[in-house]
Picture 1 (cartoon, rainbow, N blue to C red):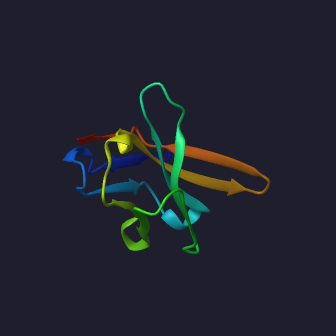
Picture 2 (picture 1 turned 120 degrees about the vertical axis):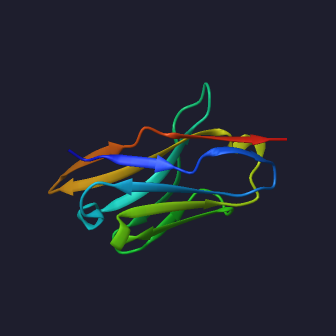
Length: 116
């Protein structure tokens, strides 16, 4: 059973910063990629950033930085210059590829609220 546990969300003023953490059960290197997604009320879940097992990153926007600590089985999302439109539930994702089949695992989400 794969478990992902996020932490680090909260209430912050516009312009502030937060760092989200996601700890995954087991060896993080089993997963081809880890990522952060977010979902605002009434909106679809959207990609924020991903990082592969090799360390390649993909971002939507330039204010966030994704990183990983393999020794701690943890992936981070550093969020700077936060805006009210960044308010959402942030979800950690792990993608496991078994041959041609991909499996996605999700955390329970952590709320980020940015006040103006």
